[in-house]
Length: 242
Image (tube, helix red, strand yellow):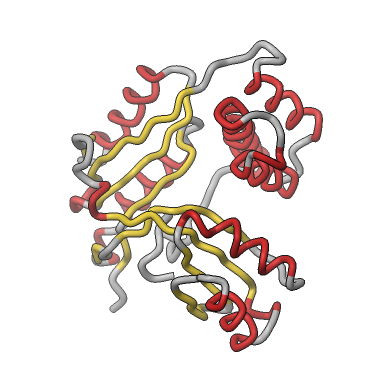
């Protein structure tokens, strides 16, 4: 997915499966909690919460944990108060990095992020130092085996999608952020399944880095992604193809 975020063209290894699942669950619970705090606990009127719960169920997070996270967010149960923040920074070779954080301790989070960046020769940036390089878009991903390219393309273009690509066995559909939910509902109503749908930050241009220089960047991105407070991670980094 050239041009897309989350270094989606890069395969990176994680630790033990149990540890990985635990980290996923922690991030899902945080997202559910803050989504319900901001928009209320009713899934029908809170698209962000509805999406978070759907993702949690797909990851096999227990229903009672989902329910508790919602109630903690709405104040029905006592719990930790989370904040959302965005950090901008630079990694090795000057690659741009944006981190969306959900945390119960802002000081701890910024210290950990600053430490990881400096560990690999990077640094935190000022507000706006990186965000201007990215554009917010709705991104829908479908398995190309779900239907013909012509059928899917005609369906999504007619309902307002901005772009359609067929890459590596996937249909990738771009929308305006405000239209993402509408396009997703139209696709599913037509009987097609989605792999994922997200509002993402897409780099306007990619920074190519030689493969021989890519390991420190990959290691930094993996450590940042493993941090419990990092909800989403974006970069303009791509390994140059020989």
